[in-house]
Length: 159
Image (cartoon, rainbow, N blue to C red; front, top):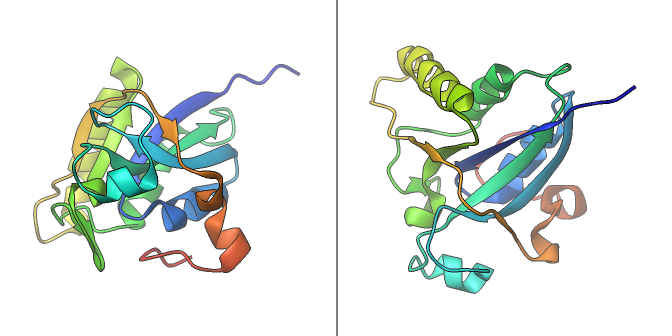
């Protein structure tokens, strides 16, 4: 059986909890913590934390669309963080902690916008999540991968 996979990339604050939350969804094959949306090539965690690279802490999700839809991933994304906060989640502050959906196609772009509009009814404040075309995704250092699984710490996300 030949499985076709797709990618989706989300930023919702500290990537440890976001990665762990997506890993729990059936149909998600992999979730990798990393950096995207900025100007610096091959940024390090220290550089991204300086809030000078333009990158967001993000999670690249590889999924099987025959098991889990992109809309289901979007629904999970809106529930795992507060998309009404500008450049912060919980105690983490800076543009690297912004809320964003990075899209890989026109279909993902339209789906993300429609999903955002549906999700808005769940929030008293306006959703400020960026919905932008995906750029190069840089995997974070090895010690950030599967952090929750190894340490039981997941930032602001409740699992």
